[in-house]
Amino acid sequence: MVNSSVQYTSYYESLPAPDDESDGRDYFRPTEATLSVWAPTIQHGGPPAGLLMRALLRCAPDPDQHFTRVTTEILGPIGLGVNRVRVRVLRPGRQITLIGADLEVQQPDGGFRLAAQSIGWRMRTADSGPIERAPLPALAAGPDDVDSQIGVTADESLGVDWGTIGFIGTVRSARTEGRTGDTPAVWLRPAIDLVAGEQIADLESIFTVLDVANGLGTRLRPDEWSWMNTDTTVHLITKPRGPWLGIDADMATGAHGFGATFADLYDADGFIGRSAQTVLLNKQGGS
Image (cartoon, rainbow, N blue to C red):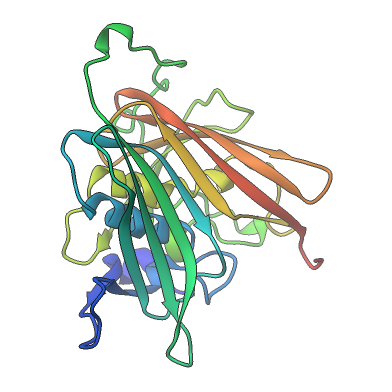
């Protein structure tokens, strides 16, 4: 693996659609900045989620609606071949709209396999300021109040480099006091572009790093266990502002090989929502 934070400036490069393409798919080449820490042949779940959010935002945009719930399903390993994304309105409406996006990865034989998909509900916006209430106050320190670094942790004794390799080596992070479980809360934002040459939108930035909640909330050692998530569901109560996402996460592990990670989410202004991820637990060296 390479230190992608040094060698790469984006997670994806936009590609022209083939001449025979007629259904509006967008094509991308993933860079090694997307790499997972679990294997050098697959992408971390974060960049694909950001790419799918990019598609959701660009599909039939309506300035009077905002995304309130987004679920991203990881249907299989997201490889490093050409990625293509298709998006469509599943349920149009003036008050609520449902949009779906699919991410397919090119296989060695030239065909494409569905690897991930996102479904997002948009709701019309209105003035509910008089009844505004967040269940928790803002984090103790905002992203501009604490020192930040590239990567999350580079503790080599864990057997996996969580600080510099692949995707984790392309995020800027800052720690502050958390309230969920006994792990700190962490501010995150991508340090590079989502798509080369494009200005990243706030929701794209947030969804690119949100998958990391599964790693931040754990107490397990990656040289003893793996805890790969199959999905991420996010409920938002407001329009996030800025590229930073504050994640205060805790992973619950059951006795039958699966668990879940739950996280409170923040922007620089305060609480913005919650996420949940289903986790498949495997003892390293086992099945």
